[in-house]
Every structure is written in structure tokens, then in C-alpha cells.
Length: 285
Ligand code: PAF
Image (tube, rainbow, N blue to C red; front, side, top):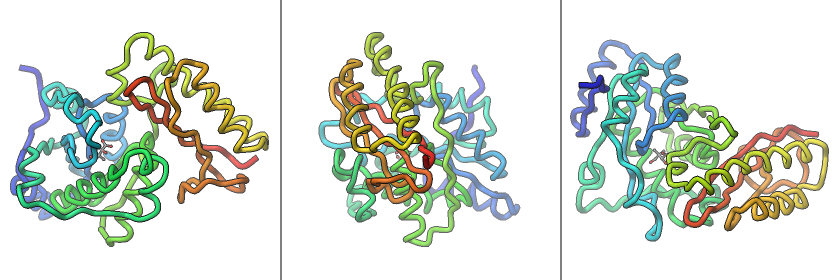
């Protein structure tokens, strides 16, 4: 039998475990995930280790953050192999509740943010960030972590989580985990598994095109022209659509016209139904 990190499936079990840890004065870290773990997730577990004595990894494919025509049903679910991968990390426990445990019938409350959750990904996936904010708030309430970590690959998600945590005075320290890339530079993502061989080759050009944009932006070229050029280059490389290539303020994610401090390029390009996300820092020229 392969070694697996132990799992609990109910809110009452995770609460009593955390209560015992807290009685011993231990610091609790949380790594929220939707499973299908890859080396990006495992790097988050390793990164939170120096901030916590015990680590909870939650695995829950959250239905409320998927739109009606999105990939909820086909999203990869592989809990046994996830728990095997986690056994080689410092993770203490997996929290893998059922949909009924998380959203019992009669559940009607949602956490909604103005502004930040309505632009970029929010404009392309209506209601997505309400679903994320609702589930992450619930996980914070259930697991009572001292610290939680989210990958910078989902850069806007991290900003949204920082915002509602601050707005609701939730006493959880939020850490951002470095974006992890495959050997050709493609951002690691559970959705990369959907790509055909040909699509995977095209996907490998995404980071190259964004890097080119970054170096031209750092040389002081016009930001709107660079966004247009990158978008054209993505389509030429074989992407079927580009949802956006935007150079934005690193915290507010609002479009900027001039880089006076560090900025960010955030982008989503599509290969058929598959949306790939990437982002990179841009230094002031
Ligand atoms: O980034 C994810 O995997 C999910 O959006 C999260 C934060 C686990 C909430 O379901």
C-alpha cells in the first residue's frame, strides 16, 4: 500500500484536530486546492512549512466558482494520487469534504466583492470570484489557520483573497507562492493535462511572447501598443483566442499608462475551450 497523507472529510473533524493543535500552541497553515496536484501545489506546501507547525491541504472542486458552461464535470479528480504526492511533503492532513458538507441544502450566503472581482478574469467569468471568496472564507472559518498560501499563477485571485481577508478582518496571514513553470516556461496548471500534443507545443510560446513584452515595456515602449503586439503574436502562434493581455498596477490591477513602480502583465489565451493564464512582473524603465 503506498504511503498517503491522512484525510478527514467533515468540518467537525477538522475543527477538533485544529483545536488540539492550538491547545499545544502550534501554528496552523492552510493550502487550499482543488486537487489534481502538480509541482506548483507541492511548492506551496513546501513554502508554507517555515511559517507553520502543522499544514492542512484542502482538496475540494468548488462548484460555485465554475460557470454554467465551464469544466466542472471534467475537472480532474484524483484524490488517492494527490494524497500519495503529499506523503512526500510536510503536509499533516488532507481536508477533503463532500459538496454536501460544504454546501448543505438551504445554503444561500455568498461573499461578493466590488471592483477587483469585476475586471479581467471577473469580466470573463461572471460570478467566479464570488465563488472563490465564498469557499475560501468558509475554509478559513472551518480550519482557523494562522497562515494560508495561494499561487501567484492566479494573480488576480490572490489579490481578491487579500482584499476580502482585509475587508472582513479575518485574522489569517496571506502568502503568495511563486509561479512555477514547466521546462519550456509554461505556467504549471492542472488544466495543462487537457492539452493535446500540438496544443501543448503552442502553449509553450505563451511565456516567450510575454517575456518579449516585459523586456520592451522595461525599455519604455508604449504599453497599449505592446499589449496589441503580444495579442497578435499569440494568435499567430496558434492560440484560438486571446481574452486579454493587460499591463496593470500590481496591487489594484487597474490599467496603467506609465510604469512608475513595479507593474504586472496579466494574460489569458485560449486553445479551444482551454483557458491558459500567465502573468509576469515588469520593472519600471
Ligand atoms: O486556486 C484554486 O485552486 C481555487 O480557486 C481555490 C483557491 C482552492 C478555491 O477553490
